[in-house]
Image 1 (cartoon, rainbow, N blue to C red):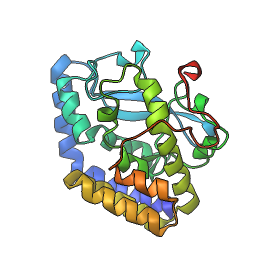
Image 2 (cartoon, rainbow, N blue to C red):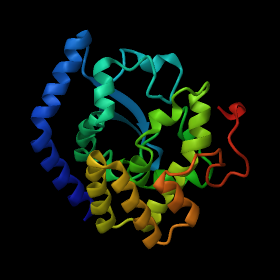
Image 3 (cartoon, rainbow, N blue to C red):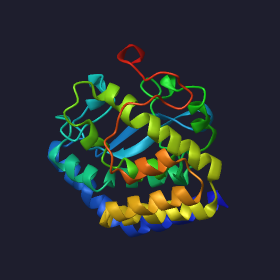
Length: 244
């Protein structure tokens, strides 16, 4: 049922947004006359590598700079890229990955190997038991990831201390409660977040509470409190720069 849901919705979205994607691709190409697509190496279900299709929002070869996490002030982001990231347009091209079975519409976001899955705790390895998704709880809760990392001296370290632990907990919570109705709710709330992020966060928080999430996870989903460093699931200590 989940696979049929993925294919049907992905086809419908591609038909609707086809002209928009074509226009954005042209804008990217006109900026520097390079391919509008970036094929990002990611780790999928069962630890299998695949290439995630993204609309390129950074300068060519930005991935060779040695920095994995990206803040909103990152100098590698092109002028067109800021527009693409603001409205999450770079995620729409991943409908192709959904169609060919690398990804699902809903599931934990895919990570890189060197700066992502290689750092996973034993608990976090469960995130690789399902197809990675285009959206999930964490995609909505941390849609402002670039702003969180803005001004950080070590963005990768800040990501692993402030964002990764909560993203992983939300991803594991989804795995424990996944069903077609939850998938539909998260797809709908992802659309709501484009119009009103605060309304989407309120609904995410209520949904988590109704499903029995722990109070601190419900509270973080509202994003009203300042984020503080916490250890990732299954770890006994906060990630330090020695682990990066």
